[in-house]
View 1 (tube, one colour):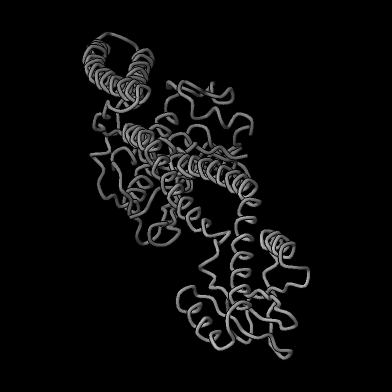
View 2 (tube, rainbow, N blue to C red):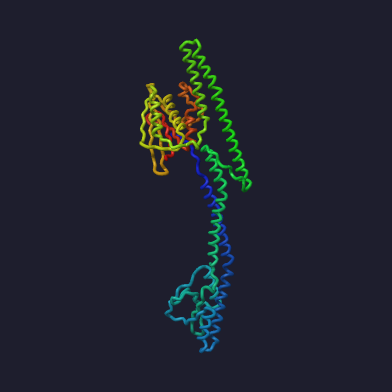
Length: 448
C-alpha cells in the first residue's frame, strides 16, 4: 500500500473544452433541425417552381420552332443561344447520354415535368460530353434535346454553402464564449495556485457578471485576511520564542547552580531539553516556506552532509548512494530539515530488530529527460515498518502510532513538517513499507 500526497488537478482546459463541446452540440442540433425543417417546407414549392420553369421554356421553344418558317429556324436557334442560353439539338440514336441526378428533389421535378410534357420525356446531365440540364421534347415525329444552363435553374442546395458558413461562424462564437466563461475561473485558479506556492497574487478584477464580481471580491478579501493571519502568526512565533525559551534558559541555569544529585540534575536537564525540542518543532511547523527564497540546490551535497552528520551518532548506520549531479529549485535549509527529520524518524523508530542500531539508506537518482527530469530521493530503514492501514496517519500533525509511543519524546510534528515543506516545493511524497521490513519514504522533486 502506498500513500501519495494529492497534487492539484488542472481543470481549466477541461472546462473550456466541455463548454465548447456542449455549445457545439447545441449548434449542430439546431442547424440539423433547421436544415430538416427548411428541406421539408421548401421541397414541394421549389420542385413545383423549377418544374414550371422547365415546362415553360420547353413549351415556348417548341411552339417557336413549330410556327417559324424553316428558313428562319437557324436565326431563331441562334437568338435562343445568344439571349436565353438555350440550345436545341436534334436527338440522334448514337448520342452519349449521361443519367440525370436522382436526388429526391430532382425526382419530384422530373415527375412534374413528365406529367406536363409526356411520359416519354427524357432528362440528362450531359449529352455528347456537353454538361447542362438536358430535356427532350418532340415535334411531330422528330425528337430534340433542349439544353438549359444550370445557372438558370434554382439550385436546391445552393443555400447549404451559407449554412456551412453560419456553422463555422457559430463554432468560432462558441469558442469565444467558452473562453470568456473560462477566463474568470482561470484567473481564480492561477491566483489560488500562487497562494499555495507561498506567493502573493495580484488582486482579481472585480468586474463582469454579478456572480464573478462577488467571487473575486470574496477571494481578494480572503487573500487580505490570510496576509493578516500570516502577520499575526509571525508576531505570535516571535512571542513564543521569547516568552518560553527565556524561562527555559533560567531554569537551565538554576538547575546547574542548584544543589542536586547527579541523577536529579540529568533528569531535569533532559526534561528541559525535551521542552525546548518541542518548542522548536512547533516553530518549524508554523514557519512558512517562501517560494521567493528558492535557489538552485545541489541535492548531492545536501544529502551527503545529512548522511555524514547522522552517521556520527552511535546508534545510526548510514549508507548513501548518490549520483554525480542532481540540481533542484528550493530552500536548502528546509530541504535539509526534511531529510534530517526522516533520518531522525528512522533512528528512533526504525531500529533493526534485535539491535539498538538503525540502518538508514539514502538513495538519490535522476530520472526523465529535459522538462520531465525529476530528482527522486529515497530514505528507508530496516525496522519493523508500519501497518498498511496506518500509513496514511503518519503525516498528520500531533500523530504518533501506538508502536512508537513508548519511545516518543516529541510533539508528533516531524513527519508533518516534512509534508508541509514538500507541499510548498510542489514535490510528491510516497510512504510505503519496504520489502524485507522497514519504512521507505520516496520524495520526487522537479530537476533543473
